[in-house]
Amino acid sequence: MTASRTGSATRRPGRTARQRALDLIALVALLGLCAGVYLVVGDAGFSVIIGAVAGLFGAWRMRH
Image (cartoon, rainbow, N blue to C red):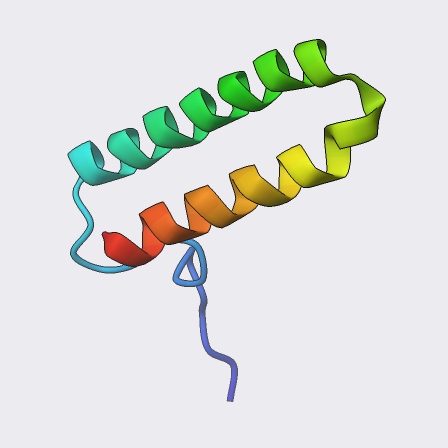
């Protein structure tokens, strides 16, 4: 009983290259925003910033 898993855990069927590219753009934009806020706030707000970005990206992915 060996099942071949060729990327089924990372790639959902039916998602187009455009949707995956949009997800990548959203993630990179959120990470850029996180870096900008980190430069302003410093070490004190790092965990809050990372948590907010993770929540925003999770909400983005759930919507799509």
